[in-house]
Image 1 (cartoon, rainbow, N blue to C red):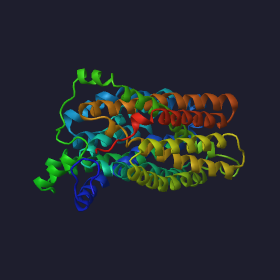
Image 2: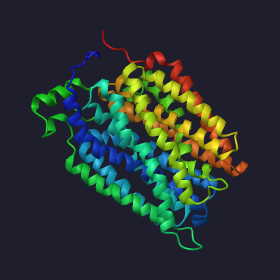
Image 3: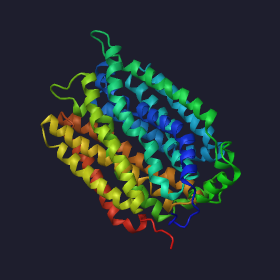
Image 4: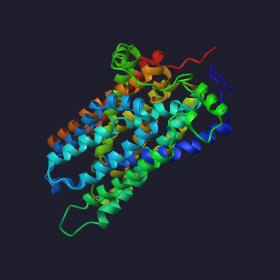
Length: 433
């Protein structure tokens, strides 16, 4: 039943679209996060290999965010000009090459350059997918669709930890700390292949999909958020107009706090979990998979609740509160099993928060405003990503552990919860009468 005032499409047609589009997108999303955060495991050896201090490791994370931030809007204007299929495929090939080349760096400065370039290439990927899927799926399927490809995030954590630990153990040489380089080579190459897969299979719009009848393509376009529109180049003047929208800036503030509270955690998680008895890369890899396993379940539950209630802001706010409390407690307790339990709760909550938050921008922004506003919101988030890794590195180097940084992440997420509650009216999706 269609209660949202939009033309509906059949469940069978939705399943066909899902089966054609989401396999390639989900694998690309998984590899995107593997390649983005494999440095978190490489960091277990980088102090010895590159002479990298905790602050230096934090800067490596922030350099990624700087590149991501600077190239956000240009990357998505590129999406509108070049087309989704070619753009997404080229991005995957580009970041795969850069990750492979990261395995050759010899100094902290070279690492910073590689991470900056990786951020620049990845800048358009997530907002491009959000915008791309809004051309294919109706509102009622929005968060569940995001959750399907968004499973790449926890799945990357589930397999990424054990895989990284195994690779770093298999390629380890006695008395050396260089096996992280093999990790980069082995995880960068598959992204190149997936980029070629996207170039070969994904259509740019429903009307270009050979596996859809013309009437089906028209129905999909009518049911999507951008109903009746055709992707077209976005001018810089239109970009400036978007900057005047209050709801865009409220989304930006909220996402800044969200990413500020989560980005540093993902980067530092393996080192935070390294405790007596959990010291080898292989053990840490398996232990770190536990929070992501429960997170993958939480994503499905939260997305279904959000789609059913159509109140994305409320579900996101509850998730933010849970994550903030769990991170705060994890920063003050000492028992490793209690810490692991709290980090599992926090990870599940932060993933639920991320998925439900991204149900908001395509709904409250439309047309060219969406093409510019969505990457602008994502860019604001990575301003938070610029701050949190360095802040956590500074705290770790000053205090000798990461507990203070974990508490800082909880504070960011508490602010995110407050903003979601304070601006709930603006973020609430009103169904058409």
